[in-house]
Length: 325
Image (cartoon, rainbow, N blue to C red; front, side, top):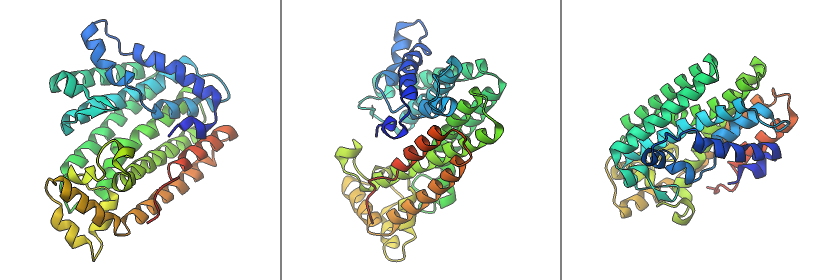
């Protein structure tokens, strides 16, 4: 997915090139070893969706981004990167963005400390942008933590509820997307109505982004994912398609008998096939479509037509090419 193909805002694309340079510079400490650790995932690349949402929300593609616009996006991206450093330690991940994860290369202790440093840099940048942005990022960090705790608390639980699931993805994914749009709207000094509308759009974008990811986890090939399909099932993270499948009167009991523990590859594939044989994928797509409707209502309140059209195309792209079940 190249988001710029859908956004169609050339000035934002140019701003993201400048932001990329500033992103690495923002975490350089002056110690060659630490600098290598803190820039490890930055140089590995990434979609930079959070900075893109922040910069687009600020400029609408009608002007070049100011330094505050760019630094707002960087603050959110650093918080996101810090969460990846910590997630990989918790998951004992070996690869991230097609390179060694930080914990695999440098060890868990260094990964945790480096993640803390990235979080501190994010907070420092936010403080420089003013109390409103600093407060927002503090609340975003709390949401991230709450989402992570919710996910860990319900790991391997076949009694996990839809409310549990939404609490986790709202915190881990949607809160950062919502805050990205909000920061951009704040640095651009948009009206309060537009700040709220863009925040709602960002939240819906994040929810759909995660729902799509969960659908792909069940349906895509290993070549598309870069990991085995159904890995969430193997790791005990029962996403929305799995929860719908567990509630299926015919397949649910068989699936429940498989889950609740670590799975070998054969069991993972058996469980995945059970999920896709139900209405779980279809119902998850329908859930995503509800968030799309909410996002479109929010966008209707944005006066900037180019931004409105670009964001509508961008969020709509998340539901393109999904499998029909």
